[in-house]
Image 1 (cartoon, rainbow, N blue to C red):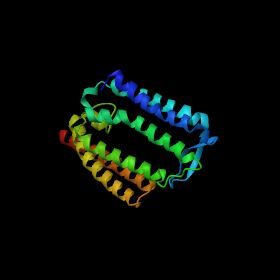
Image 2: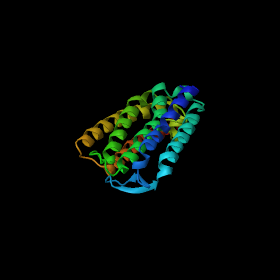
Image 3: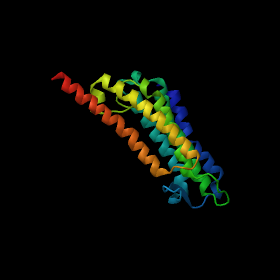
Image 4: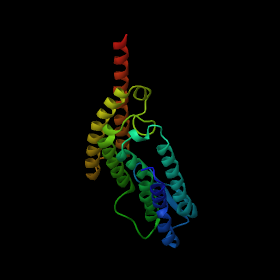
Length: 217
């Protein structure tokens, strides 16, 4: 998974939207949609050349930085192959889907029936489910996972925290996906969910640390 070949492949994937942008270049307006509000209404725009050429290159750069950080983690081998794979594919997937969506939703004579908000919610739900499924298998490292002073200091704390987080993330992701498909959720609900699934394991980790500290006295 550390191979330069995989880095090259994912970097190429990051710039694939550039091809789509070039194909539809003449149909794109001078200002391309690059941001939507919580209701799925476009509220941010970028100059066409920057959207077509600049954004894919920025995502490619982020992908290279992410690979560098993961590959040079002193505890790389403890992350788990699937966690590493999911992490390294996140930027390319976001690049292809979101930048392509920016082009498609900017073309005036083509208006997709599915809102960008719903697409984002589905993607985030699936990512939460995937990460939750493999989180218990992720061993102590400095790049991926719930990196708190207590989890990084105590491997048992790390393992117990990630075991709990795995159950919570999977359950929350499945619930969120179902409600998204039923159009019963919005971005605000997703934010609350992310805060919840982040806060509960963090509090649990601290309680483990505090109880362990008390037992040692």
